Length: 395
Image 1 (tube, helix red, strand yellow):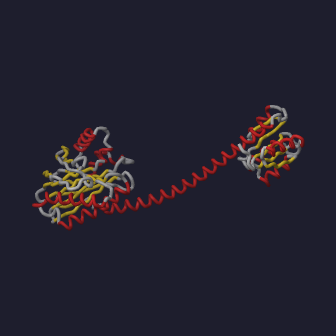
Image 2: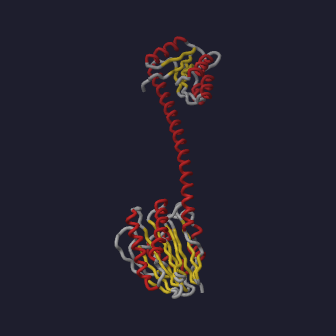
Image 3: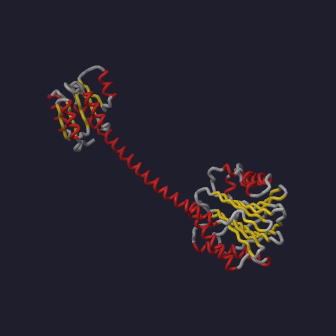
């Protein structure tokens, strides 16, 4: 490697050897400091901070091992090359144990061996210095990253609290019906959302939606949906009259779909929207690409309701058929986002759905029973957002 202006300290009480070494290393392009005994050499080391120290082993006052030990204590990264006449192997072992980077036997017949030893020591020193810089830069980057993560977590936690405040009360009771909901986010924020409204003292309307993706972008879409959906229901007086329920489903879904396409949020969503007529105890509903389909539990028998329809935010000018089902006393309606299928053991979709029905058949409906049957309390980290909406008609 090119010597550049690297500074070397030569310590040797043999003036002839020292002068020969100094001359050759100067010709090789190094800057040289020299001392004829250990104490003087250490003074130069502390004042001049050389890049490499070359010291003889046997010297009066302070020998090479003492020099090596002090240099290593003060500056562990400074290479020390020990030179000695033919001696016992114990000298080599002691020097290396004290941290010598190399050990050369005098007389130095080929000075290029010395230059090679110096260059290798400098390479190791530079590598150590580079590693230290990388370590410091990495620690600094990690510290900055931790600060950013703390800030992000605070922001995400604030967003989570806002999103939770937008959810309807749970439980929510009207007449013989009790509605409960739960959202289990895979991250701080969730793309699953639930809302409800009680219209004309007769119609309990609700929806569960699952925005594609995870995290903040999906959560922002649910906040938009909360206000857009409520505004559409209010401005168009939807889900307030039995005679136009079917028309209202299409109008609500059509308008959500249109606005979602026009706002260019870059999101699409599945949705289940339903209305329970509390006078006729009849469920009206529409499905917009939502899976799994809702589950009705009655007399310990669980079955999926029928339904079909395209997701929202993908295709313009769509229509969604309306479906109906009786809501007998003691029955429970359960709507899940597709995250529930991710925690079902089977790998095949149909097998997951059958497994879900089997577990729910052994429950009596209601949020607590569902939680126990599906062992949702045992979930540490959900692979996907899970939303659950439970509606029970009490006997």
